[in-house]
Length: 379
Image (tube, rainbow, N blue to C red; front, side, top):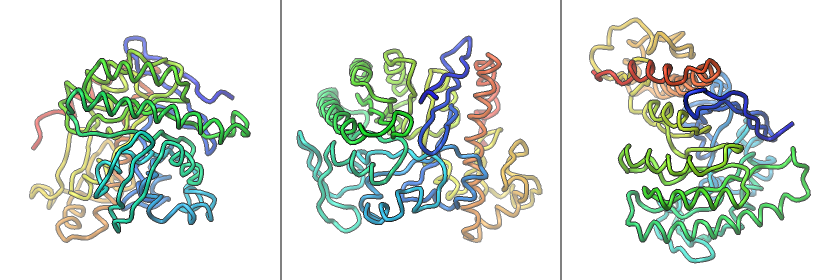
């Protein structure tokens, strides 16, 4: 069985359906992965994750390293055993969290020194030890330590960060091969290289070509959807996609807006993750087939229907907008769980619709239909 299989291609776009076979199961793409940053998807249980049809979850090396600690994860045989998750897990290297959360950090040629955002304790991440940490986490897909910078960044800063990211990626890849050389091909984890370069197409092209040459199992696109304009984001994404081989999976890190998922899949991206569905749920926002819905708005106080009549999630099958409005306004935590379940299922259902449209060769038509309904004028 091949690690990566292309199952269907759209005839008019770069959209495709693929299957990624990893240790804990198969992942059919396009796929949206719920974010379990600290060994939990916020507000929902493992039963919920299974019922909404999540094929893979994402967790974070930085957070797991600091708390609960890698020794505890090892005791449970890795993250799957610790959180009782049966399916595949992808781990982010923690580079973005070091950049965004640590109180102090210093980047050198060999790694990054940082202070914990929890207690101020000092730590040092290297390309090599981050690979070892992911081995202890026992995830299915690992990522390389990268240098994250603000976006948009000055060209000079982006180029310097990319240089370090590329050097670290080569070190990580060598160390990964050493650690996993004894494992059979179909029984080893997979390593994705992270492509940086800020908003600059030439740097993105350079990063993509270099990552392809290094020989990673897949490619993760980092440093986008973090403050740049949509035009800048998609121009940078285009420069990446035009220069990556088509025989490996491509993962857009941190992207979760439905309309952007549709456009990115049209451009050839396979995998996504984002905190948006659960974070927005905690703020009372539901994603629906007719656009975003804010449950705190007065109009929903008496409405009997579900959040989205087109949705098949537990929330939409069992609870009214009026009840969810009451829960949210009363500060009841159940509203976080129920709207999170809906939002996660909504994005997962979008990827199902994408796969079906690709099989029919009608991706452009399906995307236009979705955007026409979803992007109508908000209330």
